[in-house]
Image (cartoon, rainbow, N blue to C red):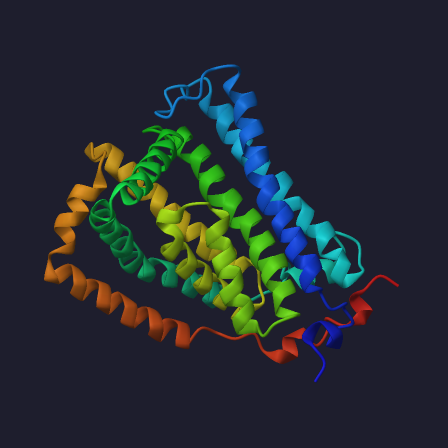
Length: 319
């Protein structure tokens, strides 16, 4: 049987070409981030405690974060997809291949967000177990914890403080922008390209791992991989890019709200409280129950009917 791309009149993505594009973006993104950060700092010393981030720098830093994602991850996808569809960057066939403009339905969006929330206790437990285990692994483990502590501090610095305007600005950069740009790149382009070469399941597994590695957080490699696999699965089920974008945004919003709550409560080190939580049997009952409901949910996740793709043929392509 011909591949899905061939059935729709699209070119078959090449593994070498897709891998080269992926590698290029993974290299370009941190480099562009360092350049933008240097420009935003304006000659200030970028200390490891992020004392250089004050009220005057923060708006520029948030803007730089958003610009970097849009220019390096988001916009290039529309031109990269042309290699497959042969259509204009913003023409109907190109957008359809990326999963833009589909109508998966409100049910899919609600279930995608609910699945993310049900996963949170399990992912949180993994992170906090690592907080307990890593110090026992010697200097390498302690170095990993120190790196993660610095990252947590950076996120708290740009998370908006206590003001509503600060929270909304942080939400736009930490929730909305990644939900759109990262999903455009990883699910819209990378996973869709791999699915034209590998089986859909293998494409989900590989893209989820790449998604985790992209964040360059060894500490969060396992939680991010699991998160990437779930988001990839619901994209396969729906073929609607809005669905993984809503799931991704829900995950980031939950993290941002947690940071805000901890800030209001004066909690600067969640590890101590969490360590106590992990020894409570009631917590693990809650984790198990949330996982059971999660797996029941994904088994019932609505699939996009094959007939819904009937109009996505070569007639959509530019003549």
